[in-house]
Image (tube, rainbow, N blue to C red; front, side, top):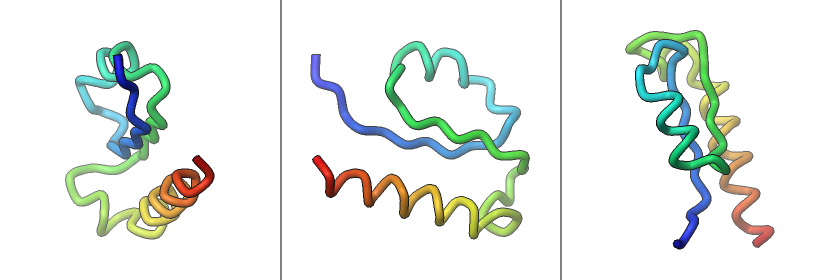
Length: 60
């Protein structure tokens, strides 16, 4: 089975959190205390997570 590097950034109330962790145990799952407008509410935090993840890909 091929494993892909994965990052997922979601709100705390996502219903699929546990199945996601089970299916992708190595995924970098970030849960933020935000709602539907996550980018408007925590855009800087989300951008920082994406930048950190993208930087980690260059070290492969």
